[in-house]
Image (cartoon, rainbow, N blue to C red):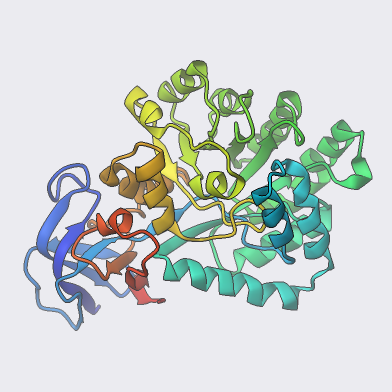
Length: 388
């Protein structure tokens, strides 16, 4: 078996405190060694013997970003909706139907290149693991189709049939929940790891959301919840009650919500690009972190409320507007995202982890917040393979 080394790393973030300084496990003048399977076999301070060398040129190397919340399979454009929001129109869940119409009309051959282009954009932002949700078909065959397409590019797929009530079920949300929890879930379950629900005014109430989650859990799926995006509500506490792996958005949190998260294993996943795009207030991550809850950052890349895969911008917003330290933001976008997917072999660079690494065109990861909007990703490796 051959080995490859990324050497001449000026500053290495491992996310393993046993390997280096502080919670980020920082090393200087380091090297990462990985084998043919794309698994890290050693972290050293000097470049060892290897079959192949990749020179970091003294730059900073960090674990690949783990984007634990995206909606990448879609067609259509909602830029006019964005313009209207900037002119003062409030954001609501109903705009999702615009995308479901366009996506349903698109063929597989039209959706595939759109999906792969978005994945390439994500790689260009340093994202090495991406979760992709369905939710833009809202029919049994349509949801399964989107999940099959998503499964062509990622192992982390999520069934979101409970995204919004389609027009055919207007005034009959419970009937639609019957479909989501029955035949739609049966078609989706073999294709996914998680089930998700949009627990929000204009989407699904707490009882409907619980039914969807219970049905998913009954067939062995992990649980996720879109929670507390548009206002305070029961979503976060439902996620904790159901032992969901993550509650996502968490924009509007009460003291009870924060207390519930802190006493649970549910990861609070913040999506600051959505708050940026919809002019929502930013969540107070400082309050959640200080309470002891686990947190993650994700892009929520989608056509309506967050049409961007820029994890570096997420980090900059988290530091500037969510009161996170740069170290907390980096960890939340890597190891935190891994936790929000129930994984411990990604989001870090240490023996046994995936060789998912990002070379920054900068001497330190602090430049991701210090120089917002700049193209600082010099190279992205997924399982040791250069993808950008």
